[in-house]
Length: 283
Image 1 (spheres, rainbow, N blue to C red):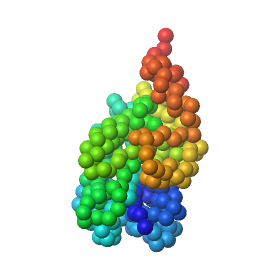
Image 2: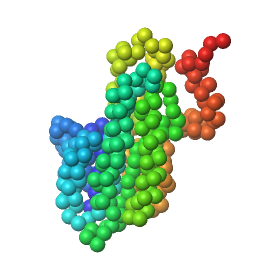
Image 3: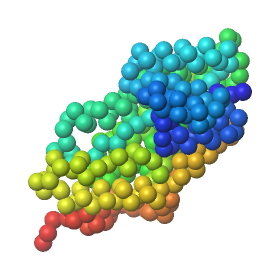
Image 4: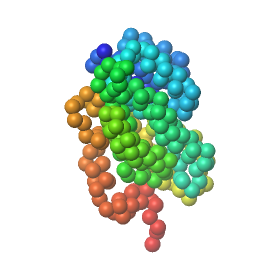
């Protein structure tokens, strides 16, 4: 049985990936931060799910989990590492508390490096290990190539994941380990659903407040009509198993809009978004 590590499986994309991979015969080591989530998912997914309890920013805990996985593999290579765990911080960049920005980068970017350093050695073929080299799948976003206003911290972390993945892919050529980006659009996940009206209270007197209200409404609407997490799980499973994967996959419910935003001249996109949100100067 092949094994895959997926971070952040309590909800959303990670949960969908774990569910689909287990259905396809994989054993999934899935990371969560709470014992209650570990117990719930163990009951839901059955014996081929092994919970790992750690925060991706806790290097000691991550390395302890990697040692646990190495022991369970019993000399087999790890077939895949899916770096999915993440948070989303929103707010105007000129007024956002720096601590919140740091937390965004720490989880979404530094956490990926911590996890990859710990688990990547298990992906590589070696005389001591049986099986072909595994693959790294980094979950980015359509926001990894298009910067929406007031999502700057999240967008910055995803732009960084895109560059990190490219550098890592070229470094790991030596080990035969491939690195693939999956960049989803709106997904029916709790990451944006966690956005509450209370989050906007610090900005009520801001010049950006009316536009912020529109962005939050858009986020909530997108979350409600996003792709099912299982659909992302199917793509992750395919990326881990097909013979010659591309380096990047985009999947979004609004594929045409995503394509247009990525290919229109940047100044035109600026004006389109600015007009929708009331950010263009009057007169």
